[in-house]
Image 1 (cartoon, one colour):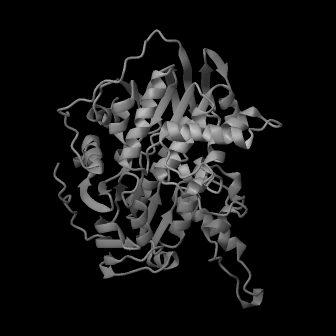
Image 2 (spheres, rainbow, N blue to C red):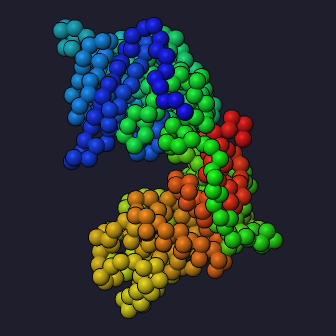
Length: 513
C-alpha cells in the first residue's frame, strides 16, 4: 500500500505540523509526525492504542511541549504553551468526557470565565440578558433547541457534548479537535452530532476527529492521517483509502492471505451443553444487541479493534455493568447479575484489562492477592487462615511458575507477567466454570505470554470455558476454538478454529459483514 501524501487542495493548510518529536525521560513517543489540516474539512486522526494520537493532541493544545518540530497556524509559526494559549490562537478541544460544570446553566458553561458585564454604573455585574442571548445564538448555530438557562445536568450526554462544541465556537475557533466524542452516544445521537459537524464544515471550520470507529470515519471524514507506534504513516483522502487499507496502515502489515495457517485448536464437541448464552444482550451507548454461546471446555476468542465493544461485553457478563436489553442464560436459565458477586456465585470469573488499577492490590502480598476471590466467595464470618492462604498461594506459585522469593512479597514489586499470573491464580483458586480474560498478556514479556496461553489451553482441556480477549490477533487465532468478531460495538460474525489473522481483519473491515 502506498503511504504517499494525499493530493492537497488549492488552499493552504490552516494548521500544519511538521517533524514533531516528543520524548519522555529519553524515550521517544512521537517521531517526525506531521499533520495538514485544511480549511473546511473534517480530518480523521487514526491509530491503534499507543500510536501517539493523545500525545500529539496534547502538544497541539499546549498541554505538552514538543521536543522538536514546527507548528504553523494560518502560515505563522506558533507554539502554544498552555491550553489557554491554544484557545487564544483559536484551537479548541472537546474531549470524550464532557469537561463542563453540571451545576451551572448551559449559558454559564458556554461563557465560563468570559461572562459579559454591565457598565460601571451597574458595578460590572454579569449582564445576564446578553449572556443568555449570546448562548441562544450559539446553540441555534449548531441546530440545538434547548433552554440555555437550565442546568447542564438536566440534559443528556449527547446534548452536553454539543454544548461543549458551542463553548468552543464561542471563542471564535479556527480549529476544533474532537477526541472520541461519540464513545458515550447511541447511533441516533451520533448522527445528530455528525449533522452539526457537517454544518460547521460548510461554514469553513477545520475539524480534527479522533475515533476508533471505522464506520464513523467514512461517514463524516474528508481526509485521514494514520499514526503507528508514535510515527507518521501517511495521509490520504478518505475516498482513496478503503477500510482494509486503513487497518493495514494502522497495523503495519498488508491483509494478504497468510502462507502458513495456525494449527486448529483442539475440537470441542458441538453436542456439549451450552454453559453461557446471551440473547440480544446490550447496553444503549456501549454495546449493540449481541448473541453469544460458550460451551464447557471451549475457548472463545473475542476479536476487534480498540473501541469495538470487547471490554464492554466482559463487564456486562460479569455484572460490572447492567444491560438494558436482552437476556443472559446460564445452563439455560435466565439470570440477572446485580454485581460481580452474583456472577462469581454462578461460576464466572474475570481477569480485568487494567491489571494495576482493577486487578492487583499492590500493597498486599502475593498470598493475600491470590486468596482474595476465594475469601470473598466464602462470605462474611468465614476466614482462610494464614496457613491456608500460604498453602493455596504456594500451590499456584508452583503451578504457574510465578517468580517470587516468597508468597509474602508485596505483589506490586513483581514483574507485570508475574502479576498477571497471580491474578489468574486468584480465579483458578475458586475453580470457575467460565473464565473471562480481558487482555491477559498486555505489557508482559514474550515468555510469560507463552506460558499464560499454554495455561489457558490446559484449563480448557480440563473442562473450563474461557472467553479470551486480546488486541494481539496472533494470540486469538492461536488459542480459540471459535472467534467472535466485533466492530463498532456490534457483532459482525464468527470464524472457526484455524482461521488466519487476515480473515479476522477482513471481517472487521468488510463494509457489509
